[in-house]
Image (cartoon, rainbow, N blue to C red; front, side, top):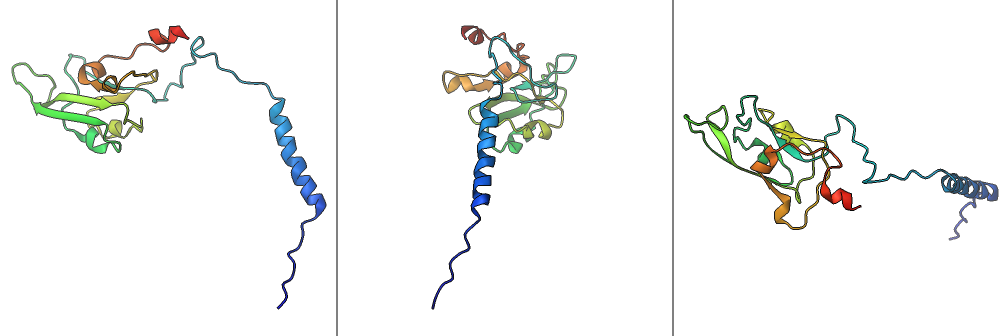
Length: 165
């Protein structure tokens, strides 16, 4: 039982493949570098690029839009959101519905910024902003509470940590 030897590729084909690969290397070697001067020159993300932290919205009359339905927590694949709903006080309501979010937390160590929580919200109470400068020195700082999420984010480049660079 004899085996036939495998056909050898043509030497010219092999040299051509190597030359094609080296052309790619030389093309990339002599191109101009694109260096970003972060944080001295901050380029804002595109307008509809929602890649930043969450924001809990309010109505024009000051009432919170969140009704404590917990749909955002159920939609979150990373289990990063904790919502505890409670009955609204009729004399002093927090939100326009029967319920409100008594406790609302987002753990940014778990959050993958997928936006499914925003899609699940029936009242558009939760939105993603373009503010992406998030840094934490402890695990406790990465868990944002309802009060922190109700505050609008500062403009890009105003974080005091950026000035150290």
